[in-house]
Image 1 (cartoon, rainbow, N blue to C red):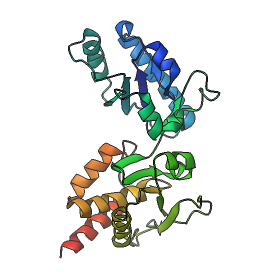
Image 2 (cartoon, rainbow, N blue to C red; image 1 turned 90 degrees about the vertical axis):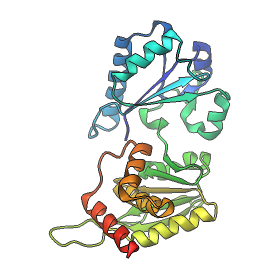
Image 3 (cartoon, rainbow, N blue to C red; image 1 turned 180 degrees about the vertical axis):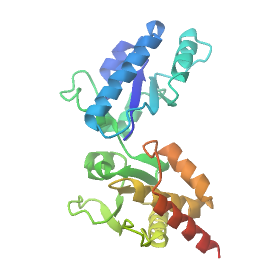
Length: 271
């Protein structure tokens, strides 16, 4: 799970009409570094309450704007200097085409001050990470169970990588299960059938399916997606892994055994 801070620098009226769950409205002209750090601490506390086992380090800052940022604007220059000290990924969500375009794509993350669920939990703004635009998504077990999210994003197929299959998947989605076995003791066994799962993803994408690859602990799904990217784009394991780390910031490290098997599998395919 990621610790993300979202600040909205639109007008207060625009913010109150519709905003992203968990975001904070700030008056950019009067915004100070102390206030920024206070918001960081506030989201860290919410994050810890939601998932106390995770690291509460800020991983991403999302700045919501009405249009593109003007670099020569003094307020923007001040904000740029402040966020550099956070040492996190900074993204700009420009609502140049209006917030309705965001609402159409991600209706589950938007609320207004009049919404009965405007104080909904910190995790409500989470959604699967896009690996290949409009085709392939990477997520966790919570994403696989969020039917409204899946429908809003047009996802049609769920690929689960876990020791056991799910028994309560919504019938509106095509669901496939790929067993993921963990090594125990000194015996080394294949953890995942990379050849089959990569072929399955490729075939689904070719048919126009929008696919979510997910797993309980995240590791199996991550490895499967890396394998697919290596084949589809002719990437090395390092390039594919770096890309996934960039697109899915929740991923902090890879399963060593899976990584070794994935590397061996990719080498065997070249022979």
